[in-house]
Length: 111
Length: 114
Image 1 (tube, one colour):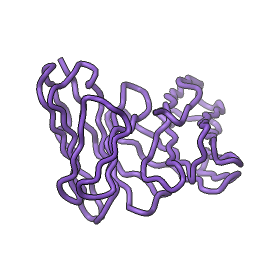
Image 2 (spheres, rainbow over the protein chains, first blue to last red):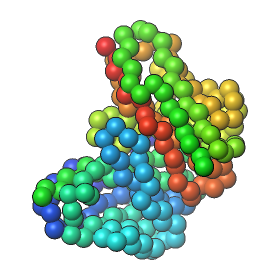
Image 3 (cartoon, each protein chain N blue to C red):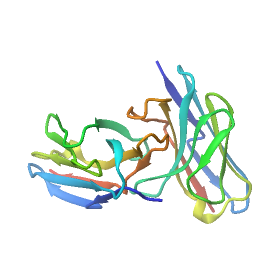
């Protein structure tokens, strides 16, 4: 069961451009996480958002959790080639031990 | 510090052969353990998770099974592999009862069924 849909699936942009990746679900999550994965490796956590409406910033990355805790977005400002990778959102239903990942967004930043 | 080991890193197996992938965690106790499968460039599909020894929850009915014979050991198995079992398999752990925390992943196993 795929509970988390990400869009777009692929994104290719020029260095310096801005972009937004979306993560949507019909389910309510106690929290949502964003990971980044390099080829041949496991995902690595970028951020966890817990409160509905929460906004977190990590340098050029801005993460937002929807008010209803069903969706999230990742915005990157002035993308750099080092931002290239597979971005994954993840969440678990409230009170549950399982952790579901989104369908993924492959970002390529062209120098 | 906590570490997670997963092996082998790569595996090429013929159709119909058995499979055993092993994952062990060090430096923590009573972790939640997870097995995921990933198609090329796509998201992770949750296959199994475990909250304790002998406790396995299956998310997707398929040709695979999982076992947790020890607290920090998680094994993914198949009796007869199918071509569709090919993929990148990832083991992960999270602290139990801290459901908002990060999942820590092993390095993955690239399985090719031929």
